[in-house]
Length: 437
Image (cartoon, rainbow, N blue to C red):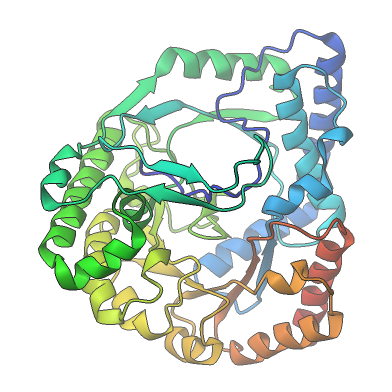
């Protein structure tokens, strides 16, 4: 599916993407509405307008002011445990948790998040899949539902070239009735407080290798580059056509939505920009060229630049050519692969992983692309929280990237060791370092 690739270890016990907004308890309704009013108030602070302007300048490569985003991810279970929720019904608790997240982040994590007075109801969009569904085998027999997952593996389903015939092109399925009903219910719940919008697909990330590696087996994919290169080429070509057909269906069914606002983009940035939508835009028919998209191939971290390009990236490039602005990368080290990344049409945001050479990447990117740096989350989540080390670590990158358009994105924070203050301190350390740089 052409949606953002969410790691399976990400913590989100309250998924609001398909939530029922019909809240029957008056007590739950009052609580949700009270929280929505706080979110509304936060969104009206002048600093939010200032941050919006900063992000627009940043995404257009017109500012050298480093921007900071912090995504607690797995740490949310420690920052905002279920015991903090007061609503009773499950659907009400989902909405409550999302509202409390925004409030908590504003009050405790001083990054450059733009808090808007929007509540997005996502359209009920799915697809039929690729013909084969990854089969995950949990290695911890004592693992319980809802617990952060430990070790698991995927059972290979594709063994020989003939097995590629089992793959099918995904077909988009849209439930318009359900989408309208959920939008109307959300509007009735707190539409007089927040700006309720119904949106289609606005987070597009093409993930060739994550899916295929689960179906074929990552080790075997590596071997295929030598032993079965034609098979791997055929698989990627099939996926390229499948993604092409998905894009066509989104356009034909009018399911694309703009993402030039606080929508999450690529592996950590947000989308504010005046460069999108493009000329000739029709608000009733969003086109691929009107939105951001991205791709990533973390599974190719240990593959040479030439083989990464030959087997994977050239297909990703064809998928990304349709879009107005693009991002590339996640946790893979792209230091030696930049010349191929630069071939991506309208590439703007490039992920610089914790394992990348920050100096060499800075020399390559300069001020021509967004330097989306991912500091190592282990320095926050380890046994000891060494503030001096973190400060020096951040300062080193700030010095190396003084000529770049830098954003600092803390993510993959799957724990804060039950010390929520660590995230607050980490963000303040970064703020102080930026001010002194």
